[in-house]
Amino acid sequence: MTPDEYECKFITCDQKELIAFLFELKFLKNEYVCSLCKNTTKFSPYKKNIDEWAWRCINKGCNNYLNYFNIRQNSFFEGLRLKLSLILRVVIKYAVRQPVYSIKKSLDISESAIQSILTKLKKRLPKCDFHENKLGGPGVLVQIDETMLNYKAKSHRGRSPLNRSDSICIVEVKNHITRAFAKIIENKEQNTLIPIICNQVAANSIIWADEHRSYQNLKNYGFEHSAVCHKYTFINYENGVNTQAIESFHNEMKLEIKRRKGIKTDKREEFLNEFCFYFNNRRDYFNSVLNLLKL
Image (cartoon, rainbow, N blue to C red; front, side):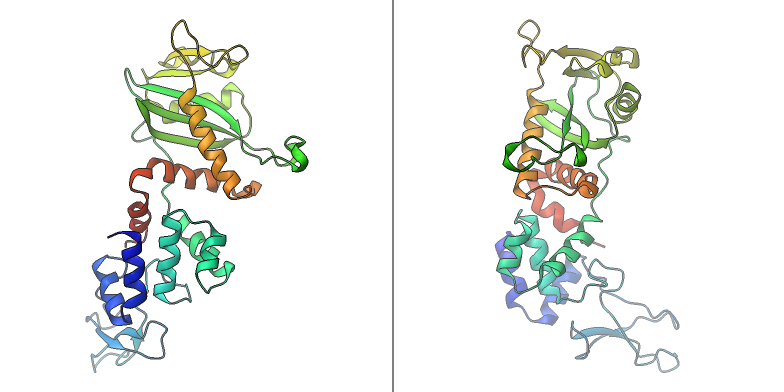
């Protein structure tokens, strides 16, 4: 189904049909067992609840007899007070890369409600970590560079050092960028960068980077390292070494920062994780976001 088809379904179907569809998608549990009598409960109408349906214990010998239980238990929707259809429409609009102000404009709900949904969704994002399946490998190219994340100050007078955040970015390249990693770093010293690289990049990888002194000993850690001097050129025409792929990744990341009108300092690590999730799943991002809702 396309995003428009999903949204149309969420708008037009009645509550029972919507819940049945969420059972099918595995966004909600399609069965609930009473915690006391251990019997399965009945899916029953319940008009006092925002969802209009709930689980109900029908075991006469149970202390929970005729008690209702929320269908949202242990799901993404638990704790959210909006209708299921509205929550789902917010998620869909986020999954097609609509900014918050655009979502707010198209739906009759507050920005704080939208943010509460998106905050909960972002907590479900997997941590960007390739330790178990490292980037690169024998004969595979990896490009590495650092970048500054703080947004430009007003009047184009440079960037404020007060909110400066540096990150190390690593991309695996096979004709195009196949996977990307980014992480906030405290400094650019060798004892900061090398452990991150060794943790994320497989030994025997071909690493291209600039001539930053922190990378000078990469060969001692089992990597094939070549460098280009950015002071004079961005491509070493003698051996073809360049950092064009990683610069392309930086540009896309900074366009996203600009689109959001900057990222608060304490949210930048979260932003990098979110952006890497998008970048690494960009060919099927919509379904990747929906999969976050599954039980």
